[in-house]
Image (cartoon, rainbow, N blue to C red):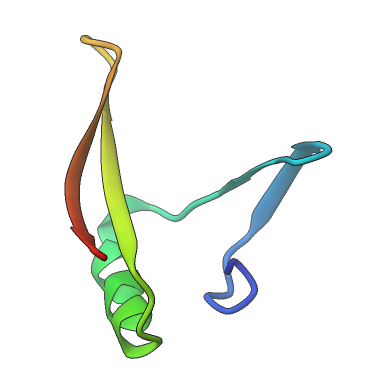
Length: 59
């Protein structure tokens, strides 16, 4: 997926990597995913509560 969206992929070790982009450009990637007809889920992490929350998505 990172190749199709032209995102940088940082490899930590076998089967563990990080792919991401700044939140200010999220709309750009949502549009690209919609054009490609891919589903997605967008999460935010609340550092104070140590909690992951789903904030948007298209399945």
